[in-house]
Image (cartoon, rainbow, N blue to C red; front, side, top):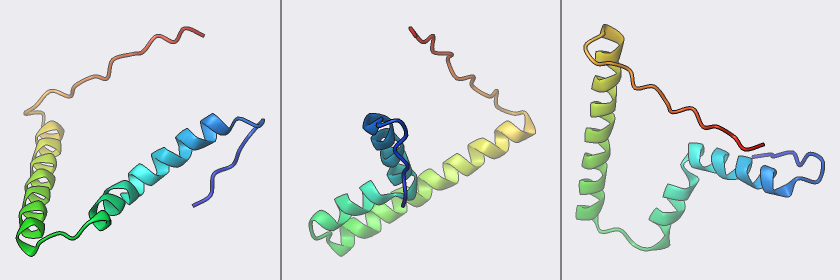
Length: 80
């Protein structure tokens, strides 16, 4: 993973790096590897993740078909 630092702006580069790591799932993997996970806990976690994925897929499908309204993101007014 590579992040360019532009104009000595390390804070912005760190933010970009954290965002990339979050997208790749590295934080979740680090948390999982921190301690041993019992097989029963692993099954429960995987099952809940599968349920979450299927709900998300169903929600997106319903939005595409027009059964659910699409929530608009709030516009953030910057103070710059």
